[in-house]
Image (tube, rainbow over all chains, first blue to last red; front, side, top):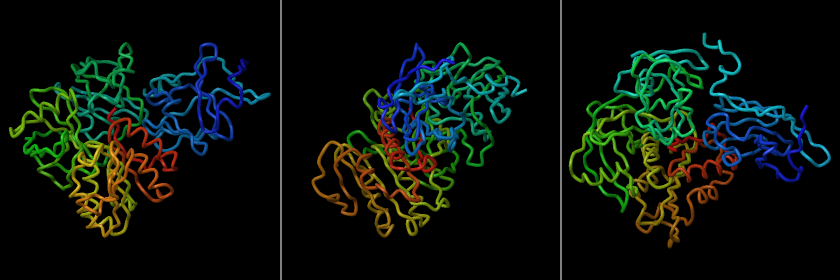
Length: 121
Length: 344
């Protein structure tokens, strides 16, 4: 386990996201009001920087570039979104937000490549 | 040449000539390959070439910036095959039911100046085209390579003549070139119709259009279709047309005509970003409202809490589109009710 402190719980206001560098790994911390999510800082669709392109409303994160969106409570994909968000586990402890970072999470070109290379065969 | 595309939803194959791009060949076959601008700027049509030889037409396309060429990544809209190819596309692909785009020839005539930097032109097609209100085509002149996307202004079934808005941009090669043609006839290659930001009356919804400058083009087609199909007898319409000053506004007479035809169910506001609106309504067309400010602010203020059962169309300069979409999502509009085609 590698729980690492991201920031103080008051550093990321409700319905905003802020990017942090944790030992060289970029982490986007999203405060959706009812909780926090720690995710890679880019949209899995076209690698848009979610700190700028993302909007958080009613627990839903939407990338404004092409409208991919996810329910941050359930991680359910909304609308025409085709890829799930990857998340680091987070916890709130003594006024700090911590994330469990084993290694950097990244999005591959397509799911088939990483999960099941025989997908198309 | 045979192009095979593997996607998350399975594999499909189609024929592609050596002179056409893989994207256009696939769309022509009725496949919904991913794309938005179809002209190299947005990057949506990226694919990975797994085997076979291809050439990229426009190597420095802005949309190619994030690609990994060493892994074989290409933009399908800029890629021509040299041999049979196997490609992988990171999205779902299926056959579409809409109008299949195809290549035609056309002649541009009647370039007519509307304002200082905006012109209207008509394109006479060799074969008529069916399209949906809000769609666009890609035009390419014989002696000026590279396609440019233009939204249709008019709306007709089996249209033999289509109309466009041309915005003159500083250093904008094609617009300068076309402006310079004046009264000459210009031969072009036409590929289309393209684009998903379409209006379908059967959706039975109110319509909101937010346009910056020449982004009004596709909205005019939507309003024409809405007016002729009697849509505004049952549903409301709100149009926000952003221009710098009142003298930059165009199609005002047509807009006023749509308002009159709608029995005031359609409201049009012209938002002036670089001058104060001196009167509450247009001095010559009092059915058109004037407002001061950026068009997305004016729209957000006017529409606050009134987006119910509405589809919102957005078009204009990329920054304006981004800010508007952000404001719409913050305003509670569902992503499925926001329609736009991304050109950057």
